Length: 428
Image (cartoon, rainbow, N blue to C red; front, side):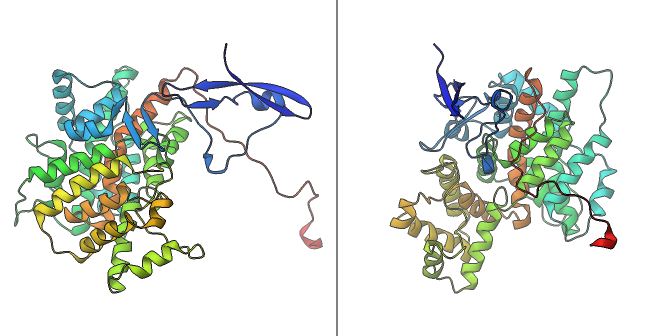
């Protein structure tokens, strides 16, 4: 017997199906509520609303669990590569060695960006944020790589997905080089996905870049941990825009714009800005911690707490290990990194932060890691976008393949003025 919830309104009772997910999550299906009752639900921020059924990513915020296609993210960070994780998310299963080799070759084959796109990059104002540039350029890719009628829809989607994964990395490094006024560095077939990115970012004719495998591993883990995170703001944006049956480039461009926000992808950049504020304030932590505890002060310690996780962020625990390893190896003398380590020590022991579940999250450690690796602060959110790309693609693909697809169109509760007559301008 199927479980049902009962809703009583105006003396009449309605039965609503209860849906149970594979991990025991339960939801009340209200898809026919308005049709049967004339009512809609009001849920600001969609904090209690599931917008889809998905078999991609599972998150349990109370237990600190994150799994991609059933595999714990900790295992993927330890044993997998970003390319393999991307294949897993997009295709639903881990690849065989032959499949992984083919996927890697396709990524290399599609890594070059059309030379005419360089003019687009160079015409952006120097002060333009890299996320704005990246969003625009991803949208422009459709014009440079239109659909080929001779190919099947499935083949076209596969090529488009691979093209995006490969070219976004190249475009990100290209935008940085153009911003610096340096000559472009092209991708190399003998480098892995993350090694290629680091080389395109930092290699130059006067100072050749030496690949450090520990930094390659760190970047691999960084991107794996960011690859997907259920129905967050940017992923929901990709699905919403994609529901209008737009092309993948346009949907991903929308996701990039959503990720740009300081409360989402820009959080790791905000962490470094906060550390800089503390440094400029003399490096003393006490005033800032006191402000964070003051209910009347809007100040927040960036990188602490999470909307979903009510315990340690599982990604943060993995990122901390990588971060500590990189900091130890590089032995950098950086006052901001010193402040970050002191702040972490205080926060994880402070009763207020523990009682309010304000544990260091992935943004706290990722901001420190990227700074230690030499990634400029304006590029932080771009790094997040590269990592999140496989998740966006897999979510878009899942929604497109859904036979019960619907154009997403949220309702509202109107609270404006009631009907009134138009007043001619001479009488106002």
